[in-house]
Length: 100
Image (cartoon, rainbow, N blue to C red; front, side, top):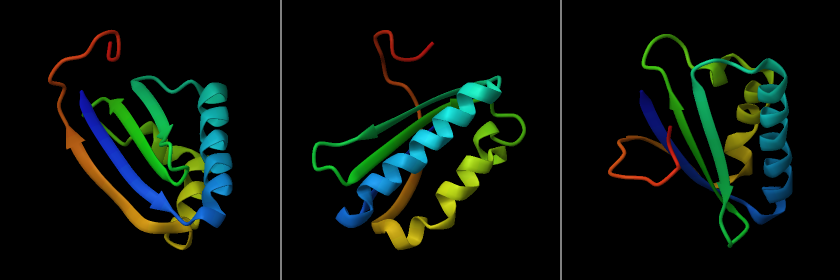
């Protein structure tokens, strides 16, 4: 399993639109139910920092990459961001009912 954490900060005027685009991704995930993917998104208390955590198979293309909603989300990310996304692979140290 590969775990990835992505964090970025959007400009305040783009925060709600960013949240709407994230919601669209989740709606498509609900419709398509891709196998081998666990995905979560957080919005921090500052209202403009977003964190996405994914867990997926090491094999093949990410199911997220194949979604039309993900393409729409990525299309304007540079214009929405005050700080661009950083992507880091991660490993679990320990968790309680967080990862399967």
